[in-house]
Image: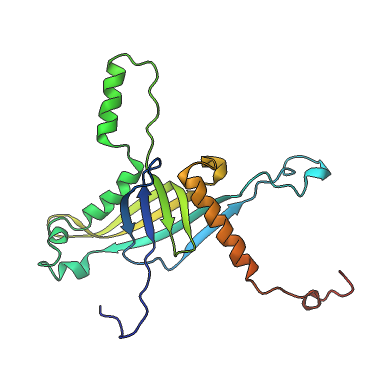
Length: 219
């Protein structure tokens, strides 16, 4: 659908896969439609949570554990009306898009085969496979290193060859902080930028007045 002349461009949310060592971008997955809602929860890390020590009651042991959940829609209907412009969609529906999302949580087949060869050769310890660093991008103010923790796909419509052409994808993500990655890791630096942006935004919030809370005589 063509937008109104002069209407502002709508930024897309999405995921960016980055090499954790070189920071080279491996893949960009833009959401076709921005979700109508996005839920976030923060589990506070405080020192006095499980102890009666009054001296610890106000101490924080680190950044909270933040989780993000969203539901995205993927629909090939518009592209199927223009087969010459979208031959891949005509052939495979939204399989490629779903595969791009799903392979985030799969180790590569080459890595699996390499580890199998090491095991067959008698290697005593095989280092767990490292995945790409996943960044959840939701505006320029929210570029967050995350780990996918929940992932479900509901395929809702198919073409005559049984290729999916419409689906809902539910994603659950856990924000990776410096507690998880360390300060020297690429993702740790991105988390610190995310936190600093929060602090800057908080500084721009309009402050309240005690009298609005019905309190007087308190400094």
